[in-house]
Image 1 (tube, rainbow, N blue to C red):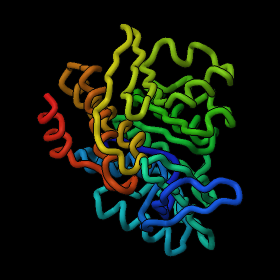
Image 2: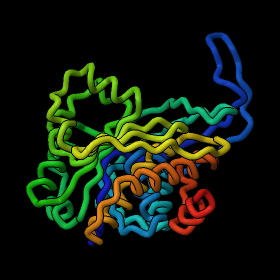
Image 3: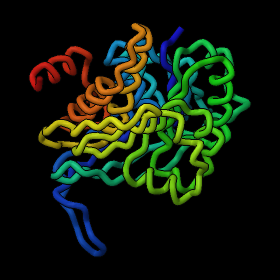
Length: 298
């Protein structure tokens, strides 16, 4: 039985480090190239595994070489992939991440079959058996079904809808989320999409500011952490690592009967900073590395 179940995209990433983002009719130089697993749901699961949390994944890949590599990598780091659907004669989603010298990222890619899991493909008992479910960008109907099943079973839900929030109707899933993760652009998109204020007023809403830390809106008031100063290498996956750190700390506090939101926010920022200081979305920190990082800064 897993403690946290993540659901959403499982990709194969090709990361190209470049000197600058090319402009129209312009050209940029590729400094290096590497490949690894990606996708927000898979990234969060990988970070949770590194933080010594029992974690499983719901998603989909093709039966191609990239899908095999993605599944093998997740298994090797301790993520349960029993909930990952393998689609026959289909291609795994591939994302090309352009990372310029300052660490900022632009993404190109095809969706492949990373949204092949529909409501009918879900196994309700797998969802009910978890202590917490974390949703990332995926089909709105699937996100809603997972959130409904979890909520009815008393399982807490977090949701990081990602950059497509403004283009998709996630209202049903948002209404059931206990914790909502957004970055600045996504927070603006949520307001512009006219979601009801009930989606945010009685739950934890974490607004990620990247290198500038994060703001947490909670029913008892706001909590702020300024983030940590690190040399940024690659911001890909940093937001996913942040979410994983926050979830892990929150669940640990609830088990101990002491939910410390300030500590959760600090730990999340440490996970995000360590990931941004390394190359690749999957170069995730271990629990020991996060502890050492925080000890050095106290």
